[in-house]
Image 1 (cartoon, rainbow, N blue to C red):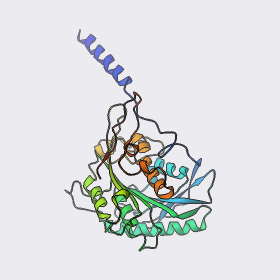
Image 2: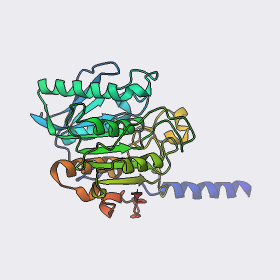
Image 3: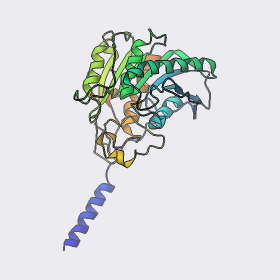
Length: 334
């Protein structure tokens, strides 16, 4: 009798799991979509050291000139592998990606991040001026994750002072300064964001289940960008959804995206903030990728602005599960 009941429960549970809805696939077109203009990504020979950089450029076909995205990695994520799928997406859309190293080890001090990154970005632009794909200095954007999110905002704020091109779109993702809900010592300092020009498009993205960074810092960035009018800035929150399998997890690792889309090492996955690290899913295609694509396109070409800012359904939409149920939309915090 017990055996029969156990078998019945096993079959019932198995059929339930088999029937679980699957997450949305990458859209074919539009921001976050797969309608790529270029078939291949070329990585130039990296320049090592904390003041070095990496360059990724489009190929097949090779453009003569292209917009530039500066991509600031999270603390300790020294290898682009952690974000390679996102980098590939940006480059295949037709953008040059500049990756400032800003650290050469985990021992690099937080106070050195900004000058290191500025040196790397400046050197990368000098290299692009000599290369076969030249930078369109009138169309430059910046994004960053975690400590890199703090850094992205800082670089954009001091660009004019440092002789860098103006960053027309700025997207800090889950910006983190080493504190957790204010309970720990700040290890990544962040400076004055008031110099950000009024025409900057600023979008701060936070995660509802991110316990390594916290939304107060993102909200603080919104408030600190005093010259940027409300129409040009937003704070938006990614939301987890376990309606289907695999679930969508809006934790600190959500922006990581490896080229093979595989999850991180199982031991890291034991920490909730790193579960599903590296996985590419709807939180990328309809979340961070869509948001940044639209933000940059709005800044550069005045298109897809409703998907970038404003808090409307085009911005907050995260796709539809395979059973037709919409994924929980992003929340607008500012």
